[in-house]
Each structure stands twice: as C-alpha cells, then as structure tokens.
Amino acid sequence: MKKILSVLVLLIVAAGFVWAGGAQEVKEGAYDWQPGKPVNLIVPWNAGGSTDRSARVTADIVSDELGVEIVVVNQGGGSGTVGTKSCMDAPRDGLTWTAGAVKDLGVYKVQGLLDTTLDDWNLYLNVAMPALVSVNPETPYEDFGDLLDAFKDNPGKIKVATAGVNSSGHTAIEMIKKYTGIEYTHVTYDGGNPAVVATVGGECDVVPQLSVEEVDMIKAGKLRPLAVLADAPLEIAGYEGTVPSIKEWIPDFEAAPIYFGLFVPADVPAEVTATLDTIWEEVVMKSDKLKDWAANNAVVFDPAYGETAVKKSFPMVQIDAWLKHDTGDTVMNPEDAGIPRP
Image (cartoon, rainbow, N blue to C red; front, side, top):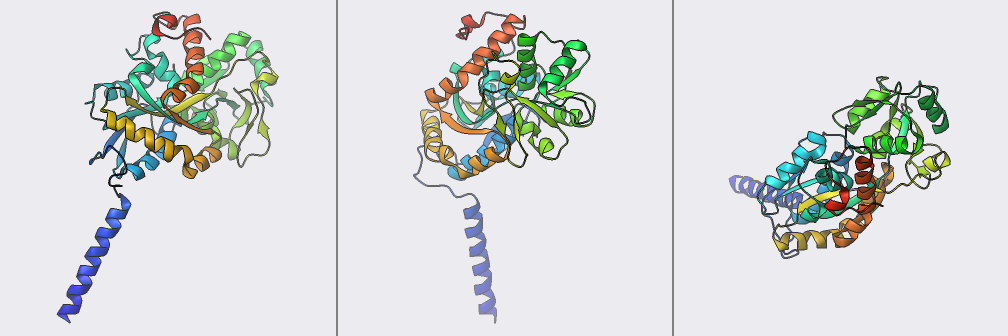
C-alpha cells in the first residue's frame, strides 16, 4: 500500500511539473533572445483605456512565444510621459518596454513634454484605432449635423470629455475645431474609459475618444455614435448599422489612422529586437487572437514593425504635431524635430 501511495505521489508531482511548464514554456532555440525572467511593460495610461487593452492582448501573445511573463504596470500621468520616461530611465537590457499611440510618442518633443523622438524607439504595432464622436443618448443629437449646429449655436457651452491634453480624444475634437471653428468646454479625465463613463453618466454631452474605449457602451445602447474620424464608415460587430464618416459633414477633413503598439528603446541589445522582429513577422501579424480582438472592439488589425511601422504611423504624427503647433501648443517648430508639415 505504501508503495502504491508513493507511486501516486510521484505521478501527481510529475503532472504538476508538466502543467506548470506548459503554462509558460520557453521555446528553446527558437529565438536569439531568451529573457529568462519577466519583462516589464509600462502602460503610461490608466487601466481600461485603449492603450491598456490593446497592450494586454498583445503582451499575452508575445509572452506565450518568449516563455516568460510580461508584467503590465499602469503608470499614468503627464499625458503619457510619466510612464514613458520610466521606460527611458530603465536599464537597456530589453526587459522594460512601454506602449501607446505612436502619435503621442512622436509629438512629446515638440510639446516640450519629453525629450524623445521616434528615432529613439523600435515600434511594434498591433492595431489602428479610429476616434468616434459619440453622445449620451439622452441628448437630442441624432446625427453629427445636429451636434455641429449645437456647437455653433452654443459656443463654449457643450461639455466634451477626453482623456486629457495629448489624448486621442483631445486631438479629435481639436481637429474638428480646426475645420469648423467650434468652441467647447473641455473636461478632462484620467483615461479614455473614465471619459466614456462620465458621458454615459451625464456629466458631459460628448466623448470623442477611440472606438475601443466606446464600443462596449455603444453595444449596450448607452452611447450614440454620430461619426467616425475616418475616410469610410465604421462597422461595429454587435451594433446595428454603421457609423458614418465625418466627411459626410466635413468633406475636406483629412484623417489618418492612429496606430498603437509596444515600444522598445532603440539601443537595447540587437538580439532583443531580432527576436521581437521575428515574433511580429511569424506570430503577431498572423494572430487569430489579435484579429478576433480587433473585430470585436471596432479597431483595425494591422500589425507591423521596423520601417513599415514608421511609414504607417507617421501621417498621424504629422497631423497631430502641426495641429498643436498651429494652435500654439508646441515649444518648437515640428520641422526642427524631423516632422514636415503634411
């Protein structure tokens, strides 16, 4: 009997080791870089927003390939600069990354917020996200034309909720202001999700944040989407109908995709970037998990890395940098930071 019990114990222990190994299995020899310890991914915005949600699903995919845990740390503040600076200050061993929208990373220097440019980073893109102008269903605005008329009839009185200066929502409403001359009351929150919740709760009338931050409330009927800042209408899985393009009301509106991704300092060891390049090429760019997540969150699946990533994301950097410069929100000419006018 003791012999049988001993065998059973050994089998249970062995099974436990097999299960634990399967949960985080290192693919020996598959990649040039084997971290051997957890990677820290600093998300420079609060939990629940566009950066946080897209970063976490991507981190899960990469973690499975590397065979180590990727620890997501939310460190908001300073329009994304606090967490980004923490990544910049970390040892260049490849074990600390950050995340966000490329257009934010690209304009920090011209705004005087952080001394960095895209040249300081390796970009690993996951999805592109459009901004949606949505309203509380209790408001009388049935389409964007109604809202635009209200802005013009009540200058400075309509409350617009965003994740703060330098957020995608703030960029969206400022782009609309550029083309229409509207005035509004800007109400800022600590992230896109709180801005959406505030609009649902009636604190504000309008929220122009990103689709991923609004999609759940749109599906639940707690937000009414009026327009997407894109050249074509947007289809949302689980939502009847499509969201019309803002070009129906502002034909000359110039839109560009807002790309998100993970960012790794450019001066990490070469084997780190070689490994991540391979993972993006062979895994992330083919990932059904990321494709499904994109479809369910009204964003565009479009992973890229290297020069292709820069080429895809740079148009929105240009638009945002010059929008801020033309409104007096920069400390230097974007040209001097390598950002020509679009």
